[in-house]
Image (tube, rainbow, N blue to C red; front, top):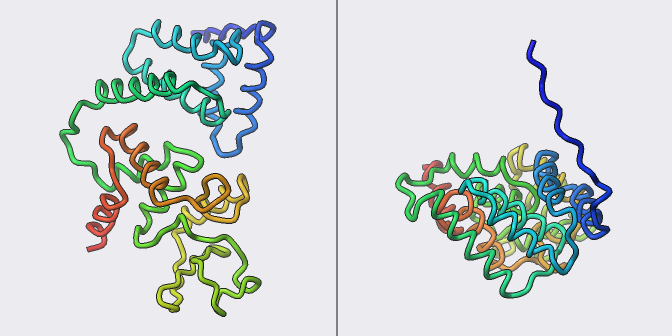
Length: 252
């Protein structure tokens, strides 16, 4: 009977306090799944001796010494996730370097032009690979893109007096309340999306469904999220209008 090789133990005694802090931040994140945490920790283990001043230099060495193109892209994506989740400050030059490499390796892997059209099912499948705000934004706009979800207020309808003149669209207990010309329409999301919204609000209680800097996210902010996601994973930058067309196509 073949025995599995045990993975070598990680010598955590060599980790700097900075890396230990980053690992704790990643492990405490409630909006990323266990598999993603494992992948991010694997990279942090390799960066174990890093400090705040040389982490990017050490990452660059790991990136440059990774030969396989797909592996390089994975390392780059994981580093970007760590930077975002742990709020690591990069210089403008470092940010530009990351963006250039993301664009370069995305094109190498996906091709300069996607030969087959992106289907509605491709985007639905992508949602399951995402987490956090990216997953929620794409799921919302793949459900129904008629509404501006960035302006939806979270609250109790009975307490806020929505029907007595409250101007914001609202979400309460599994139902959207959209107001157009003082006419209120109610829309219950699919159960899967309702659960996604619920867990998102539990992990990150907030006033608006999609927030940025403690304020309702702007349409441009939402558009950039959708564009970045689809460009990174599907090889083509899609807009909210593109999603609207694909949604309407399957409805007709």
